[in-house]
Image (cartoon, rainbow, N blue to C red; front, side, top):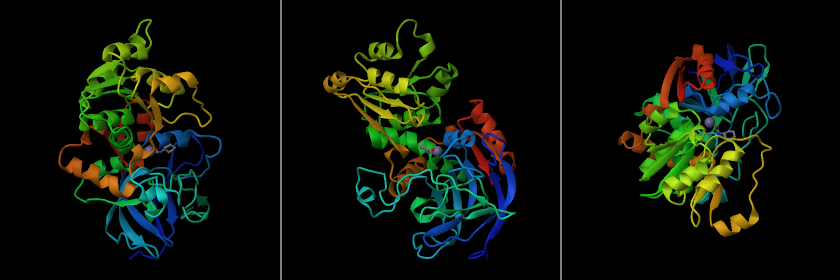
Length: 378
Ligand code: CXF
Ligand code: ZN
C-alpha cells in the first residue's frame, strides 16, 4: 500500500524548451487536502502540450511535466476528498469545476470563479509542486494535470469520474481536444438541425466540431483547410463540402462560402488560432443570426479588429469557447454515454499509439502534421 508515502516512478520531463523529453525517475508526493494521486493509464498529446513544450518565454517554466489529456485510476486521496475513492477511474480536466461558485452553479458558464483557469506551474490551492527529481529539484506542473508521468497529483476540482468500461485510449480523448470541439458545436454554438456550419482548420479540434455538428443534425458542414488531404479526411468526420483557400482563385474564402450557402453559414468555427481567419469566419457567416465561435489559440497579444458600424448592422455575434463550453463534472459523462451508445465517434481521432518510452515520437508526429491524436500508453 502506497497511500501516504511518496511514490518513485517514471515521468517525461521537459528540461529545456523544444528539447526531446527525458524519461527520468521522479518522486511524487502524497496528495494533500482535496487532492488525489492518480496512476495514469494512458495519455494523449494535445496541441497545447506541443505549444508549451516549445515556449521559451514566461509563462513557460522548466523543468516541467507536461500532458493534460489522460485517464487514470485513483491510487490514494488526500484529506477531505469524498467524491472519489481508491480504484475509481477518472479523467483529469484542465478547467476546474468547484461546484459552488456562481459560474459552476449556472448552466450558462463553465468558467469557475473560485479556481479560475491559470497557467500556474503549481497545485491549485498553494504554490507548491508534488514532483521532485531524484536530486530533490522541483519539477513544475502543467495545466493542473501533468499526465506525462506514471503517477500525478490532481486537485479534486479537476477530476471527473468515468465509466471504466470505456476503453482508456478513447476515454482520454474526452479530457481536452475532442470534448472541446464537440462541445463548441453542442454547448457554445448550440447548432440546430438543418443548419450550415463552416469550420476553419480541420485538425483534431475542427474535426471534433464537425462531429459535434453532425450530432446536432447540421445539414451542411463546410471544412476549410489549406491542406488538400483534409478533404478526404474530413469526409470521415461528416464534412460535406471542402474549401481550400489556395484553390479559390481571385475570390476570398468568405466569398466562396457566401456563394455556396446563399448568404453565409449559420455557424462558423475558427480552429486554427489566426486572427485573419476569425475575420474571414465573421465575413462567412450569415447576417441576421450568424455566429462565430473562436476556438483557436493565437498569440496572447493578438488583437481582433471589427468595424463598429458593421458589428452594429450585421446582427452577427462572436463568442469564445473554452473547453467547448462544457462543464467538466456534468457534461463529460453525457459524451461518454453517447460514445457507448455508438452515436459519438471517437475511434477515428486516434491515428497513432506509442509506448511511454517513445513519447517523443508523439511530438514528432504532431509536429509533422501526421497525427490527429497519438495515444501514449504508460
Ligand atoms: C488550452 C486552452 C488555451 C490555453 C492553454 C490551454 N487548453 C487545452 O489545451
Ligand atoms: Zn488540450
